[in-house]
View 1 (cartoon, one colour):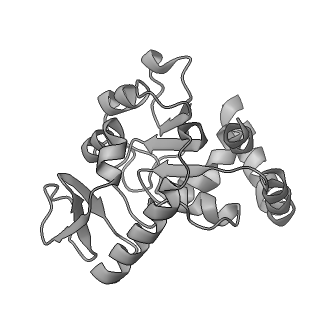
View 2 (cartoon, helix red, strand yellow):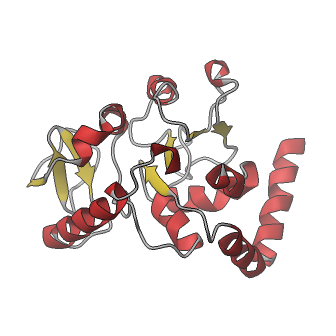
View 3 (cartoon, helix red, strand yellow):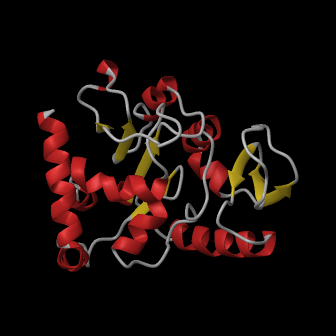
Length: 217
């Protein structure tokens, strides 16, 4: 109850002073180089908040948990593969009303793109920008418990050899004690088994986690 009250107060404060806080955050990180790799739209919303150009292709799309972990486990290889657009998914969870592509055997769901050409052009341009940053310590990896991401995926994620990793879930796993794992009170409105969508989860992030300090680390 105390935690829920604290989160509520923080939310109201940020809503009231959103513009002031936004300007302060932009100024604070103005000289910091960072690349955000996210399993959904959380990353793109972060770039918008800090008013940064997209130097990551992980914007306006999502990856299912198994694919995302496989990609991160062999990151350099997959990020040098060419997109191949396909007409069907191995995950029959939703109707395909958007472009779907593969990087070798990894599915990339371009949910916020109208055409394959648009998805390909932006993916390739942003990937090229991303790969200009060769210091992996400037990469920030995020995952959450949506899109078939299981407890096992979260545990595997935190074993990856990247310096900067954060996970979000509605569950507090004892195995992740000491890791940057954020337990979120709010869940998806229709399905209480996981956190809200990426855009909403980004707005909630500041209530639980000092994102500025993480990116400045």
